[in-house]
Image (cartoon, rainbow, N blue to C red; front, side, top):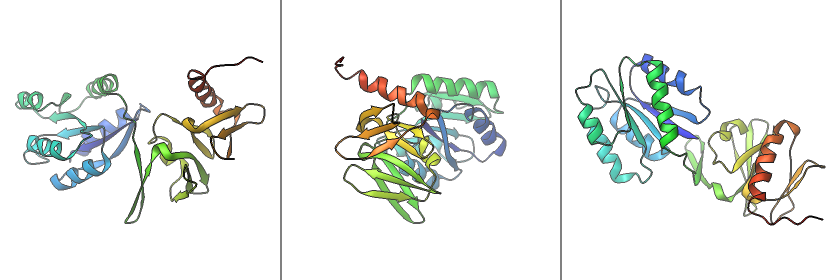
Amino acid sequence: MRNYLIIDNNQNSIQSIKNVLNDYADFNFIGICNEYNTAMNVILKEAPDLVFFNIDNVIENPFEFTRELNLFNQEFPVFIAMSNSKDRLYEVIKNGFIDFLLKPLSELEIRKSALRVLKKIPARSRKHLCLKSYKDYQYLKTDEILFLKADNNTTDFYMNDGNIISAYKTLKTFESTLPDNFHRIHKSYIINKNFVSRIQYGKHFCSIKKNSYKVPFTKTYIKNIELINKALSGHSYQSLN
């Protein structure tokens, strides 16, 4: 999954980008900015993988913006420049932008640019997940999450230390933002395959390492169970009885 941000004030351009990237499950839209400090804050806090950046008239000194960002951000996003002319193309290349889109944007060029990103930039395995509730921000280490359980319109995170942490969002909200080692196995459960110790196909349960949790799965998500089984089998010796 690659999270992307748009820095622009043109609604047609914004909608064109969203329409194309909605065709790909690998992209997740996180927001729009059109002011220097707001954009800087969002990038530093959310750490998007990709930023579509209108370099014409949205933010003054756009290349100074990317240079300043580089001073603070260890997980530096890739940038795609957008402009009404090619006059600043040399600066775009010099400042390390991955691509350039000439306005007005065309669906084909946006799609080609998106596919370049998918090919060149691997999805990051995010180490932390931020749970937001009003002015409260709680950060969970993703490698300490055993599984997630839906509870009406909230989601419970079962942690390796025994804690259960609730978030006031649906399970589907987190499905697209978790690393690749998390799999939906039930309408109410997402599991971290790194903690799976046993898969019982007959009883439709996954057992979790070092505790008594048994997480159910359903036939609807059997392909994800097979993916987990294949991944774990590849790192195990098999004994045939």
